[in-house]
Length: 426
Image (tube, rainbow, N blue to C red; front, side, top):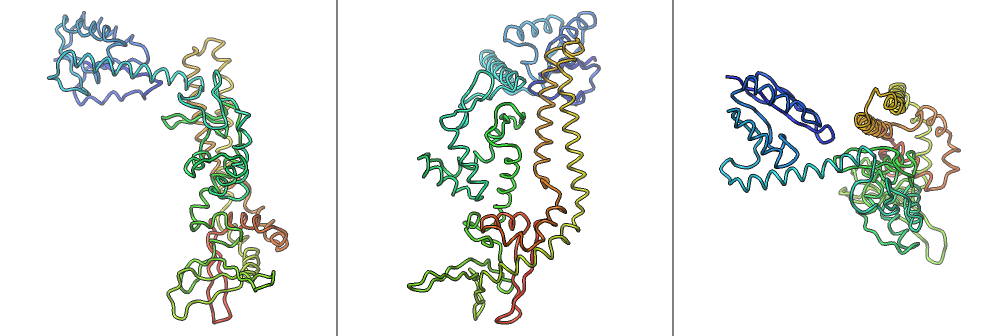
């Protein structure tokens, strides 16, 4: 008994199937990629030496239309070969009409996906409305100058204050543009605003159109979002730099900043007090300014030691390897036009190779973005000077505290004495 198998796959839509997927003792596998030359060879070989069975995954692999599929089925039937469909999506007992309708639907769906895949090769935008701030051009997104200031101010506000809700309220107040917090979250994570195009299959192609924010700003936004996830609710954009960071070491309650004023006087006092203290008597509040000064002293003392202990050369090595790999792929990408012009590659192969290279570059750039943007040892030296912290505003100090500190624990020695412990994010 002779058994042969045939597979057809489009490189634009799916990976090449493994030859060992059948679960049968197969004498030979005919495999087509994009065209159907091997199918013609199969039919020719069967005329010379007929097989008993031909295995295929789906009926639509036999042709691009119902007529082509019917013609190939007739040829196999005349040769006395039994066709076995291993991934049949409809029961064998259905009527011929339903089978043809199912086949026609699958082929139409495949043609649509092939059209989308060809557009991806050209880095064309996916179907649908362009994101706010852009318009659809002939081959790529183009900036919509009428609403560009709204989007730019939204990102600038978020980069400055780290507050999504604050940025949403800001553009509503300044421009009258109402968006939901969910929409704002999508703006922050959408690769389109960074000059990249994302597709429904999860792949991203870099540098396809003019960006609204730079890659560095995009990486900073990602770091702020990750950092804000660790903070308690409503403290991401709090005006005080220690908000959301301080925890009482006795009752393990987060501590909030409380403002106390004196009647008919402009002077105000700031305290840090536990929110959910269960102790009796309750843990007392501590002057905010004292905790702030002690935090600056501790970070100047402890940060260089913490940075020295995380082996930064390894991180920098990873960064260098990723940078070299990106440069290598960009170099290969730049050579493709020359290889096409010299006839070494045909245009379709070159387009497919360029697409894969650009998606691989996007993945490497995403890995690069999550690494520390600068040498931590150099940063630690700069921020270990007390005057650096004293010269900053509260919003600037808040930014740097959250870049390094995960938590500040206050341990009380007695009613009036306490000490700090800094827990760094690395």
